[in-house]
Image (cartoon, rainbow, N blue to C red; front, side, top):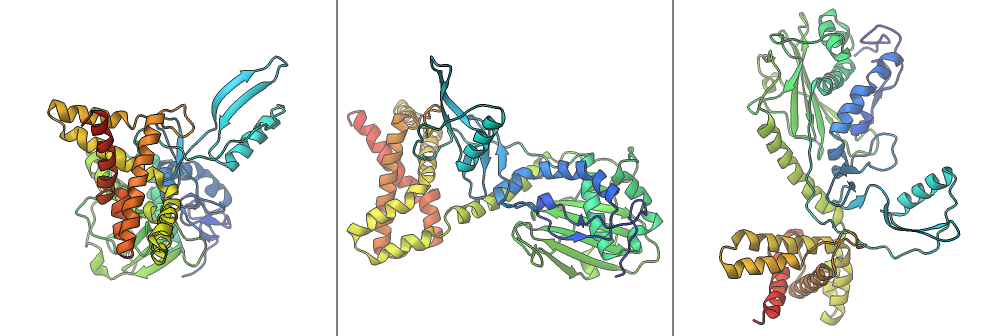
Length: 463
């Protein structure tokens, strides 16, 4: 490879330290030989658009943007208001919540508020003082866990002309890094004009970026968990690319014809969870058998993608759930198994203390049981039982933890039952990660929680 110092778009002097892969998506590497400063800056809106489309996934996976100290959380809407979710699946309120605001006779106000954490409190405090308000903290409540009243539903999309232009730009960045001279060929001018937004494609013209169909050739397995991949191919047919996000969503890129070039193919694996180079990018030369002999760009925008993308998204979210499980329970298995060495009397309070941060999973199990009863209820008796179980888990958005008094008591009963089950299992021997997951996510754990709740209902009915 030879180093070039002329911008691939306008020919001006380079040196803008362009992120080869977007910084907001976990890109760490920069290249001074691709863009000039003005061309780098003009692509910021495209970069921001694609980053916003993938922002939810960044948040729930825990991708830290380059130059950021911590990952940005995923923003979602819920029945309880705007929330932010971290890579362990923990939700917090996106904004401080006002519980009460009572004016006093001396012109001051006594305001009770809820904050997601110390950082949010300090940011709110600084904002109030910047606006000229004198704020004095008179009492601080105990930290408590907040439970969400309903499942969070996510609306997500990836695509559109501007997002596709950004994907083409990313592929061209890697192309220019790998083949600096070829990236400046006049044959790629139509592609660059489209990326820059100075050329619009009409029906009948070959597309430059499109979703890879389900039966397209396979990329090699990703080298990193939730890794991005950029595949580049040169041959007598022209220059192609394929971009994959989070090992799930694939798009083809057609750069254009490049006559007279040697056949070559390479795949770049990008690790969005890497903290710094050199663990962030891995390049692998590929044999020609990996790439089809010809790829025909479509002449219209791909249609009927909803089912295809929904299936891809659901598959990715299953992997995200597994990832969040590992982050949320890191160290829990070893700590629980360590209690195997103490007596049963000593073990139970230790198990209870270890499981208390995971009360949200107990509430999930209880709601899972109530939903199962509702689905299978067909006669008056079973319908009444389903109604009673649901009434035991009624939320209360005005309470500090989001639960009604009855739901709080039901959660405690389920928690005690689950602690007993796990304590007894530890008496028999160490837990495996699979067994712990089954206990906290369903199966035996749901059975234990459901049994104690049903017993309470039957007792209330005088059974």
